[in-house]
Length: 153
Image (cartoon, rainbow, N blue to C red; front, side, top):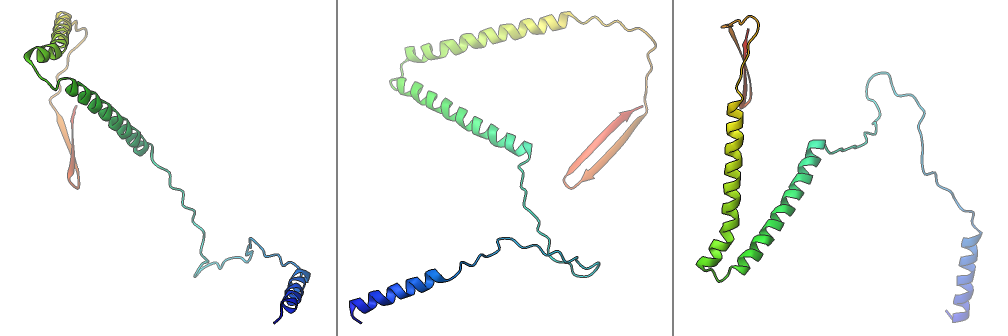
C-alpha cells in the first residue's frame, strides 16, 4: 500500500473513532432488592479495621528506645575502650576511681536512709484488736497458670 493510501486510511479510521459517542460506565451500583428472610443470604462486605492495641504500640516504642539506648551505650563503651587500648595500671585506676566514688556515695546515702526509716517506728494502737484465724483458700487454674487467693475473715 502506498504511503498516501496508508495516510488516507489512517485518517479515515481516526475520524470514524472520533465520531463515536463516549460511553460512560457506572462506577458504583446498589442492589435495592430486599434479602430473603431466611436461607442463603447475599454476601455482606466486612471491612478490615485492624487497630494496634495500646500495649503493643507501647512495647514497640519501648523496644525502639531500648535499642537506641543500648546502641548509644555500646558506642560510648567502644570509644572508651579505644582510648584505653594501651591498658596500664594507672589508666585502670583512673577509670575505676569515679565508679568507686559513686558506689561509696550510694552506699552512704542508702545507709542513712535505712537508719532514718528504722528510727521512726512509733506504733500507737487505739481501739480494739481482733484476731481472725479463718482462712478461705480459693484456687483457680487455667492451662499452665494457677491463681491462689487466701482471704482472711
